[in-house]
Length: 105
Image (cartoon, rainbow, N blue to C red):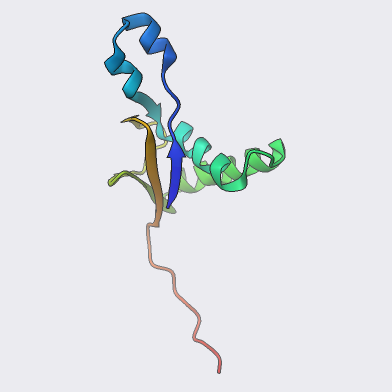
């Protein structure tokens, strides 16, 4: 599980002036995955490593290799939108069980 801090949508607050919009931010799954990858590899990781990691993660999601679970809701489409607030839990689940090699003694 990866815990991701969700940034506030300051544009929505400025437009609507409602504090309710400050508490919830609509995000595409692809953007949320970018935050999750950055959380895992760290803020000091080189830009090219981040780029390769997010590219491979999105490619795997689009290919159906895995699904993404965000606070209990599953997503297979990187362009799906979810409304988040505060901190979200991101989990990855393989689409198919992998065969494991027999253990050697």
